[in-house]
Image (cartoon, rainbow, N blue to C red; front, side, top):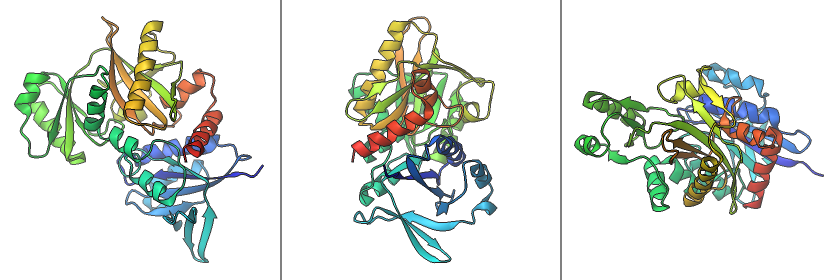
Length: 350
């Protein structure tokens, strides 16, 4: 059987560039070379596209700008071609592409932008389409969709630059509350405010990352993550995971740099709570028109057992400590098999 021509894209002009490199390294280590002819496109922090001909281990060197001495490359937008264009010293080279795995997190990758390019090029790709990716990237739009679907979640206030809503936040949410950029993932730019002064500081910080932000009431309880996979008939992994952050909350540093954060798989929850959580995960996935995969995060109140939806990540982390693949592995699906299934879903969704 002929190999599938797979293009893996990673890096990106995003605050989550380094996380993407870690995720891509894990993905590349687990791709079956007997099934796929793999081409790798690296996007620099500045947004330059390159043909990466190194291995998974070499991705750690890309944090050094001096190491970006590769040929320039890009996906051709010509949908009659479905090719990678590589611009080297020997001239133009082209490589056929059957499917793309965009291992990109955050802006300019997980937000519908790269998905739009791939739609234009007519190339199938892993993950949600333009609408689902963009909707889930914008926390305020996602919140509105969750609300319309009748899914319980924390109270929230949307704020755009120039708007004065501190009084509304204090009246509707109180303290403590969380301030989040509307369009940033991996808890980038998120702060916890205990008073008006900290709220003002958090708002100023969040606006450095985005022109719109979300202020959300603090939820107390257990942080739980679930893994959903599928297109029109999505399923949530039977096993869900629990997070005990080393920091005050599960911020960027706790997710990727602090080994003291504890992930418990399976989560220590009653079966009926797990079922409710899994049901809401699929409900939220459908409400946002997700495809392929997503990690859906929740809070579970310890006293009542009530389940509250937090957010959806349409391209969750695939690092060695990331929950998405771990939950499927605990449910009987190996990392390599998971990649096979995600690629099959991408090809099925063309």
